[in-house]
Length: 230
Picture 1 (cartoon, rainbow, N blue to C red):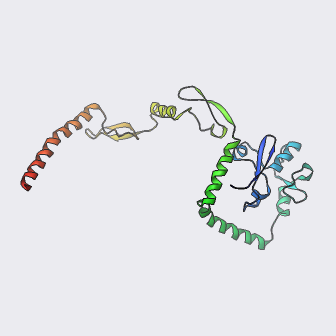
Picture 2 (cartoon, rainbow, N blue to C red; picture 1 turned 90 degrees about the vertical axis):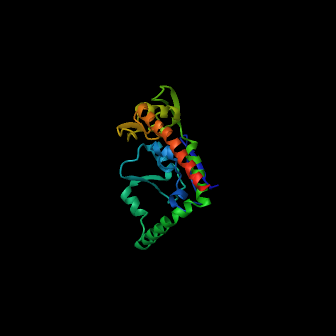
Picture 3 (cartoon, rainbow, N blue to C red; picture 1 turned 45 degrees about the vertical axis):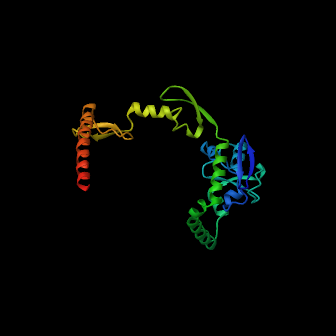
């Protein structure tokens, strides 16, 4: 299991990962994806906002003593982003090393993500994302009944069940495509997931009759062929 540290602030859990290869994951406490979707920022930013309000545009929250783990309000200062970037800037040699290191990490990332360690990280991360995701009430577009879904799914969850979703697609003919009838060649709408080949029962009966007439002929040919071989 991936080691993490958790701090709760204003009812929201923030985590950092001391053993992470990424600086920001090691030094900053961050909320889960659901909270970030609601506009929640890192712990030090949320603490500053709780005391002074929204962070002005073009400004960052800086740790005065240089310790990113010291999130006491007395240690947090709102500074211009330009100054903050210059303060934490890198010399050309280090910047070149960072770019080279980033390129190496990008090349190695696919192998790590598919490794047992990477897959375990994704499993744990997926569980953590769902831990604090609140639910919202919604109305099904097909049956009109109430149902509950995760807040991040509310913008795309329109039905209370797969059954209602399938019923809506059939009723609205959302999956219809144009096909040509095997008998008369007429174009007709048909569900893309169904094997309908005829525009009407009449045409389907024609194909069925042809198959019935074909069977005796095939059987006769088979009998004559076997007679010759014998």
